[in-house]
Image (cartoon, rainbow, N blue to C red; front, side, top):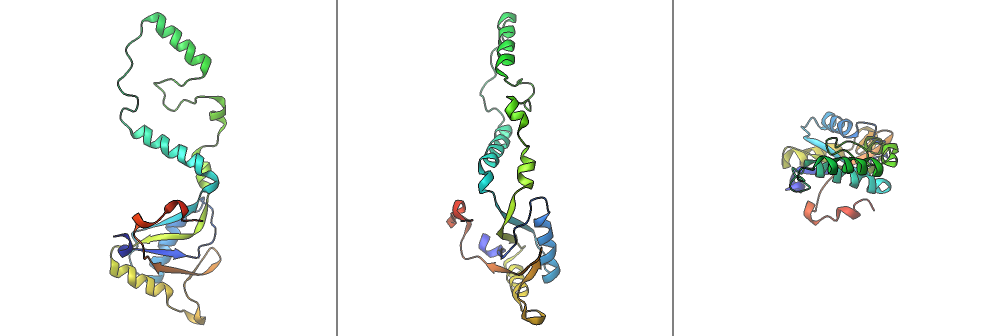
Length: 181
């Protein structure tokens, strides 16, 4: 289960989403522990952008749905097709053949989701996935072992004393909506 292979990083500074935070932390922990790290997942502080991110996720999911609108519409006679094309033009509806077409000028002016994502800031926590429970436990011990000068943990982006903790809870028992609050 998750708590057997995952440790939580505690004490991260607020870092921009433009930086490769997950890759940096993975490399940092591997260098300190000389242990394999499968991956790192940062808990991003996205409360201010939750609506935009939710819409983008819903769009991705709907694009993955093979047939979200049911069966195709019946073919139209030439007069109905001309009227339908006029309606699309007047109301600013996208062309069904072009799924990326904007539905309005306001949508065209909106920043792409990549911009929103790069402006996110990391929360003080991240999750590190290890290949086994033994590797996770040894990595937690090594990261939290006192160094010269009594310093515990590691440094990242100017923050000192960043540590790893073993998890007590399974993912299905965590109220993720409240995680950052």
